Image (cartoon, rainbow, N blue to C red; front, side):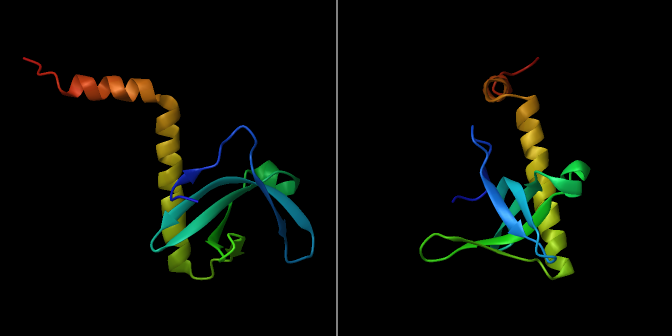
Length: 117
């Protein structure tokens, strides 16, 4: 998968997490994005208290040689801060893109080349 890949296709991909207490939690994949020298994944729970609260889970994301995904916990506070900031920037860019469509951006780019006197 490529950096900063938004996975909001027609069918939202999901991941089933096994929590520390042994329960399974199905989550929608929001995005896979870079931060520092690693890639990370943002997951939104689809059921339970976490879903009602709008909680987002962030994990380190890697693929093995066969392309199978591997999620790892972020254990370091500094790494978590880096990832959370990168995810916030990703959300900000997505919100901007939703507010101003691609056609509007092209129109604004064209207007930038016009001199105003």
